[in-house]
Amino acid sequence: MSSTPHGLAASLLRWDIFCAVIDNYGDIGVCWRLARQLVAEHGVAVRLWVDDLSRFVQLCPQADPAADTQAVGGVEVRCWHATLDAGVEPAEVVIEAFACEPPASYLVKMAGRVRKPVWINLEYLSAEAWVEDCHLMASPHPRLPLVKHFFFPGFTARTGGLLREHDLLARRDAFVADGRASDAFWHATGFVPPPADVLRVSLFAYRHADVRGLLQAFAGCGRPMLCAIPDGPLLDEAAVFLGRDALRPGDEVVAGSLIVRVLPFVAQPDYDALLWCCDLNFVRGEDSFVRAQWAARPLVWHIYPQAEDVHLGKLDAFMARYVEGLAVDAGTAIARLAHAWNAGDALDAPLAAVLACLPALQAHACSWAARLAAPPGLAARLAEFALDRLQ
Ligand code: TRH
Image (cartoon, rainbow, N blue to C red; front, top):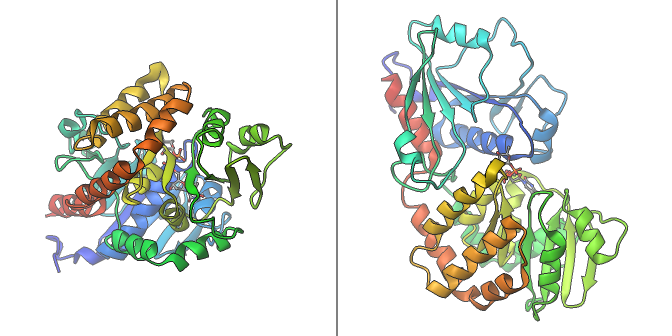
């Protein structure tokens, strides 16, 4: 077992992860997944500070939204109040997720340490080339004797990699190989398993998505389709398309050759099962986007919108990487659908082109996931970096 100069076995290392929930689920989604993996696979003690437990419990229903301190999944989850208790001592490794800025009082205590904690800013995922140059960049604090390191997730060996539990792909393959597992998922969400000849699509996107346009394209594509929509902001538009006042979890509505099912918002680990049950996944943000890639199924990414369409450049950077090695027609089709979905353009023709290439896209999704899984995952790279810094 590796150890630090303190003679501290790696397993005794304490990590603090600070997570400020900006909006949506991604911030806490990524931090919760990382925290669990560090505890389960790297044997460290993790304290996860979250400033909005109500969002956390949607991903982790067994958690208590009112508890100041609770142990969940081996992680010590703390409610991050404006001021931290005076008794809180910094950990040996401090993760500041998405530049959320740990409390000033906490930084002062870090600076007061003889052996300074390793301070890491976990950045957002991007497929853009510049990430490689910024990964692990050091930034001295303007006043305190502290150095912050920027850790960029990414798709190449010169980045921080992607979050992936060590047994994820084996669990996926076992799930896919066992039809009873997907049947159980549908039953658990309140539905019978869909007919075998129906193309199953999951739909998770931002509120501004052209849901009616997409459902219209599904209904008009000439093949039986099932669209599973988790409970959330898309239901309003879906209800309008289906001529309903409202839609709720458990609802199933048939529109010609299209079946729309409204699923409950499931616990984070179960979201993988939804992705594994579908033939095509519409995902968003960061964490669901990465999970869809590990699911080894074709995906369409609704990227988090940014000012001046900066996000479209990020989308192009990913699509350029993703279509490498893919037949031109299939590559063009999936990139065109992703663009149309993010730009709010017409979806019928782009969807038809993708459906025509689905076997090639499916095969590519498998090789893409296998290629991404070759190097170590983000948690392992983070742990290695932190231990190196503590040497
Ligand atoms: O919720 P998001 O849009 O999060 C976003 C992004 O992370 C974005 O990068 C960031 O800037 C913004 O937040 C602030 O999308 P994301 O990242 O996919 O996170 C969704 C999480 O919700 C993911 O962990 C999966 C989880 N989830 C469930 O647990 N159950 C569900 O039923 C569904 C649909 C999702």
